[in-house]
Length: 498
Ligand code: GLU
Image (cartoon, rainbow, N blue to C red; front, side, top):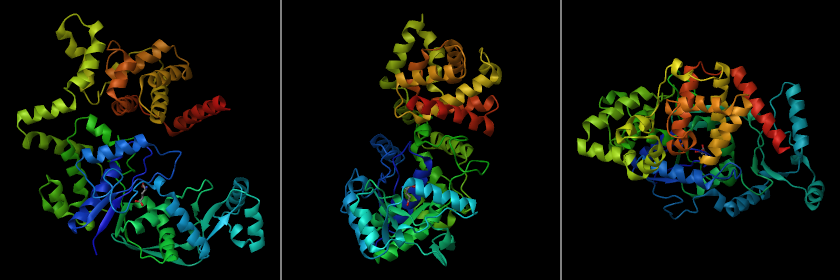
């Protein structure tokens, strides 16, 4: 049997380093066993998925040096590889489950479900579908259908006993069926949920081994049951520990940049980044830490992955990146990399245009635009506080802007300006004063090239990280502040929509 693995990102945001790590572990496993690795796009959540996100995810994985034998961009015999193009397949499969008595249509309204859950919570029970529509008689079901009411399709799930999942890395995991909900498989708009699409596709695409994030462990019983209902053999499952921050908390944007694009923009070399991620699957006893993709493959063992949680240690990444710069290239090759990174006409021309009205001599250029070539600025508190906002206003301004920037569909000049104006209003400051605080955090000085244009050129990732660092330097945000400020943003948005 040929080993076939896959990575199945959902295109709902920036390309996450965790996606690259999961992709690489699956790639190494497949190639080590002479198998195939494929990429599937899981875009069943139409609200949150976007073509733009899919594009940057694919580009980022390719930039790292990964490739796939089959996928939406390269095709293959098991396509389409984008779930939104496979809805007919899911519908047929759901019909099979209904016909076999393994799934049922559920006509419950959102209000009924909400009421049911509230009652369950009041009784101290875990919210779980109570099986109301499972127990409809044939006539009642027919009447509901004839009335044209919207429905979802749910899977039947036992309410007693224990499900045992044999995890490739963790051994048997026991999960009580009573904790597993009668999962919705098909939504009322006819789109499948992740669970149905994932199982159907893994089977039809011939996947033999699934290595995915540990957040999916609780879904494994549903998947196991679906394989049984269909009469298919389940691929071997392995749940990978999530990447962690240095303090062992789950890797999150709040503490560490998580977008691959940030690391690219910071001037990390793709081969160093890939090597760094690959070390999680390599035995530390090997000694040598620099490894090409082929070496990562040959040294890969699932057992090397620490279940305690691999730490995304930026200091180590820096060290490794430095070694690649020193040990793998001569100055001419390094210059080539620097040119490709930022010293090229495409990047320099708009910067020169912004600087033109602000310089008298060519030698004024360097100091004026150096922030375009830096990563983080690490400004001391005194520099950051050189503005008229109160300390509270300044922290709030950075936080509100970061949230709004994260939510922007595209990083474009008018949207950036809108967010900054809006932020100034929300913190009750003069626009001029708010802008100065942003000028400092983003460019390091209140008198740089025009702020909004500079931010547009710098890109979302660098701007976000500079704001995050500035916020940290000013003491960060307490969780009660975060809750209150978030509620404020939400309440006002709702009022606007309302
Ligand atoms: N679309 C899921 C994700 O993005 C894939 C999970 C899986 O590999 O089964 O995490």
